[in-house]
Every structure is written in C-alpha cells, then in structure tokens.
Length: 151
Image (cartoon, rainbow, N blue to C red; front, side):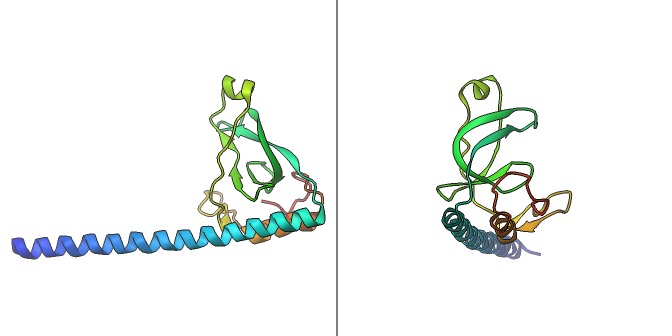
C-alpha cells in the first residue's frame, strides 16, 4: 500500500466515522424530542386529572444523603431518582451532595428525557417512558412507591 493509498484510506475512515456520529446525533435528537413530547403530554394530563404534586428531593451520588430542591412535580420511579417537574422538565435527582447541599439545598438541572428508562443499565431492567408515565397517571395518587408497577 502506497502513501497515497494510505492517505485515501484514512480519509475514507474519517468520513465514515463522521457520518456515523452525525447519524447517531440525529437519532438521539429525534428520541429526545419524542420523549419531551411525552413529558409535556404527561404534565398536561396530570394537571387535568388533578394528580397531586410533591416537593421533590435529590439524593447524593453515594445514595446516603437527601437534599431539598425548589422543584415540585412527580417522581416517576420507586427510587425517587427520576422526576418530572410541573414545568414539564425531566430531572435526574442525583447530586454531589455534601454539607453545603444539606444546608442550602440543591438545584438539579433538567436533563433530556430518555425514551426508554433504564436502558443500558447493568441490571437489565428497562421500561418505555410512555409506559412509566401512563402507569403513574393510572395509579392516580402520584405518591412515590405507591404502585409496584413502577421501575
């Protein structure tokens, strides 16, 4: 293989990698948009049905601490690590924690909602976001852990 052939091969490889990354980014953006629509639907439906909200709390990364937030909404899993706030934003409620967080509370940033909650996890348990939100609506209480059907 000559120098020119090697250079052409490297260029083709770079183009293929770039095309793959672009396609993956488009797929993820489409999934996030679809999940955002599901979350917006859930908030509208939960509000319409009068599903009670709760003041959301975050947990430390180590699982030991529990920290106040300014968020109000609905937990969507038993572990209370995922929630939807009343403004229609999805939150992962795990934070670094520490004394400052304990004293002043925390403000977890919203994150893109996944279409499948728990996908790629080591325990193999995953559930479509639509199913999780529908079960929460059908439960009707909005209380964390009140239905065994949640993830």
